Image (cartoon, rainbow, N blue to C red):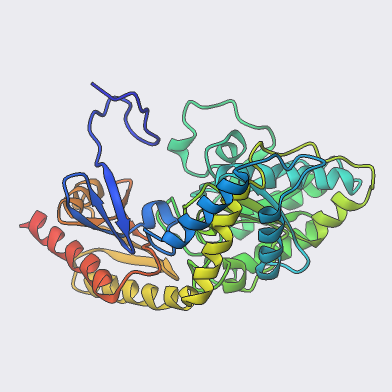
Length: 407
């Protein structure tokens, strides 16, 4: 019989799950004592690795002083102000402000709402249309689900938020035609710089720069969903830096605390910021109970300390190169079909006769965690503290499992 806990992204009828009980670095252990290499940083987020007492101590100290308090007008707190100032210094665009929330899903819905209300404040209330891409994953709140480009995640959840449409993932011409057709009604283009949950699809050369040009041409905002790519995953603070493209709004979550506390947010760049600040009497009627949660913000600040002190952005480039080279070697030997990725996030594209779920399960049995996407892709985005030997263990285990299942 299923337990009282209704699991996310799982069959409601499933009765048994792998119980994770402990973590250290890039390793976790299950309730049976099995050691597992965390090839997915849990769910793309544990950049600094598991078991960081430094973060736990900071959260504990903050909770003993002030666990939580609303940041709705007229209140604020030190950890939220300090983290926002810190993030301002590494933001993907100059002179950005930071809106804080609790998750990537909340961040995406916030960015969509801010894009629309900023246009209203700028005197263009007709700008409501938000365009996203197929294969895009933008969380599971209703705004993000409406912008989803992964069809199974939308099935039977409608009706969706109005005036949100998708275009083919890599088709600039279709996007250009749509924006030209809708003229001054486009509010924003929303995209993951590297599409993650769909199976890790980097952008084609020049694609993101083309989005920037189209948004400039049509007066729309460019929103980067950096919930996965932010905070070092590509070897720079954000994918916007990595690809040298300036967005107007950027969503984040996951890596900002390495998952030690739920925290997300949106960088609000100069254009939408100016619109929101133009009328001194405008009151922003958007926010969440835990926006600016002091304990979560304390975790974020210490997490940034670790990323900087241990040079984990640079480490991401090294880890990514190891994964890339290992998977390319497997592809060259015909073990897998191909590999694709960017920075420290890589996918193994499987051959037609191989089943991702079956391979994932056998890899787990042999001590390596990865994520299966459909039947044809396995994804890997390990903690940035992973050792060279542990990366080798990921690649070797994949090769061994495929060899054993093909025999």
